[in-house]
Each structure stands twice: as structure tokens, then as C-alpha cells.
Length: 276
Image (cartoon, rainbow, N blue to C red):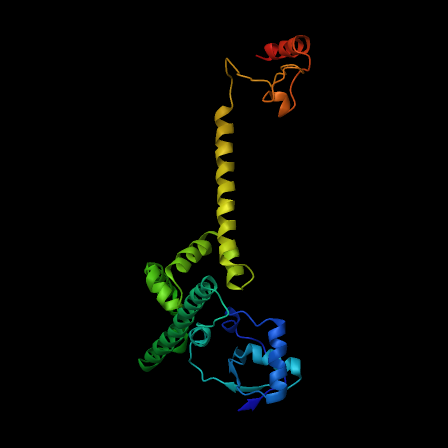
């Protein structure tokens, strides 16, 4: 066991999951004040990887946090998911997006570790074969790009059912959030952080898609209507007179042209005839 007095930073993997609310943090701080910190805060690479809420509660309570350092070599993203993947305070949509992010980051981390290991093995082999250090420096380093691309293709090819099982969610959440992540990654980030319900994000995405579609149609129609035509058809809102006794005439629904039948209408009509 070890204790630290300096301010700790949080590992990016731990930040995949949302923090407790301020009220819940204060309740936790009160509990730690009365009963002590029962579980150590876990550190990885000098950063908090498990126990952010306990750490924040200790700061609130003015108590020196108790920590443990995890051994090197663990996959931090897989570690965080295994501890928090089944939390009950997150929605299915949110859970899937967190799993998706952790899975992608885990693949990148593993590829980086493999690249480091491959590079070390290559240098060791070349050194044993009598190749000089200068020659080794001139040789290009291996790349993890292929590994990442292969993993991305593997993840994309997984069925919705397989993704649902891995993320402890359901097919509906997988399909909805995969579409949201593709089309509106900004909204997906808000859902993942718990700032926006998944249903609201989907509605906003669909609404904007409809608006865009209508704008595209309007632009196409406006472009198609441009040019010179022999005839223009106009249907002005003519007035039928004040005392028609009809309740369904135009005057009862919108402003019309002319208010006394013939004279004004003839005058206005003449103008329209000139236009035509």
C-alpha cells in the first residue's frame, strides 16, 4: 500500500464512464469520513484508473487517499470495462457507446504494445546477427497500422447480436448507436457522457435529416424552375365581396386582393395581365 499527497490525474480509460453526481459524491465523502476509505484507489502509469469517485470524495472530505499501483502490462481499457461494464446507473445506449470506445482504444493499445515488442525482438535479432547500431537505426520501424485496420474490420463485421452480447446491451441499442456514431458523432459523445438521452439524440438526428432532405428537394426544384417560359399560371386571392353570406370564402381565411368586386379587381387584374 502507498499514499500520495500530490494531486492525481485520471487515466483516459477511467474517464470513459461518467462520474457520480455532486450529491452522491458528498454522500460518499460523508461515508468515508465516518467509516474510512475501505477500498484502495488503483493507479496505472501514475494515474487513477479505478476509484475516481473515491478519490474525489477523499478530496471533499480532506482525507489523504490510499492507493495501490497496478502492475505494468495490463490493458487499461479492458481493465476499466471489466470493472464498470455492468454498472446499473447507465442506459443501454450509453453502455454500448462506452463499450465501443473502450474496445477501439483497447485495440490501439494492444497494437502499440505489439509494435514495441516486435521492434525489441527485431533489434535483438539484428544485434545477435552482428548488425551495427547505425544500420539498425536506418531500418524502418514496424507499424501497427495493419493491426489496427484488421481489428477495425473485425469489429465492423461483428453482428449486432455479437456486439450486444459483448457490451451487455441489446441489438436495438447497438443498431441505433452505431448509426448515431456514424452520422452524428457529436451527439453520440453527449449520449456516452450521460448528457443527452439516446432517444432524444436519435430524434434530433432524424429531424435534421428530414430538414436537409427538404432543403435539397427545394434547391433542386428551384434550379429546375429557372429559365424562360411562354406561360406563367397565377391564381391571385381575389375577393368575392363583403356581403356574399358565405363563410367558406377566401376573406374568412386570409387577406385578399380588392374589397369591392369589379373596379379594384379589374385594376389589379390589368396589372397581372401585363405580367402574363
